[in-house]
Image (cartoon, rainbow, N blue to C red; front, side, top):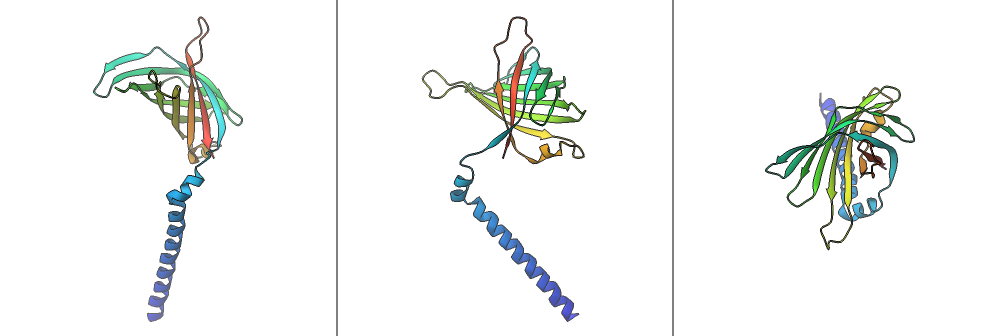
Length: 187
């Protein structure tokens, strides 16, 4: 019994030491001085560009947070180096024009790959148009959460951070409205 007790103590002490060493390594990597070097130059990889068709804006009106509006997502297509498919109709982009003039976007929609796999997109964006005399140009960037089936060839999309761009192309006469969303994996 004494030998078993000592053996359990040795195992416990070993586990505690391993956790401490792991935490020390994590703490060193979390050090603000080190993180400046780690994140100085983010690198990204283009996953796809999507032409997302949009419907007529529904103006909900003024709320306690600003002006609320909703834009239906009616379909579209996407293509990239390793993935292609369609944007399914039925999603929506909920927008809030804040009192400071910036617009927050929260879009939720489904995409279907050419091989039939469906996954969800949550796209949270910020748009800022500089005021007269303010430095900088028009700014719009997003953080994209992708939820793909774990038993699919696209499970890798569940294990990364994605950033997005938004382009609003000049429409040709009689062309249905759409936006172009670029999706980039942070490496």
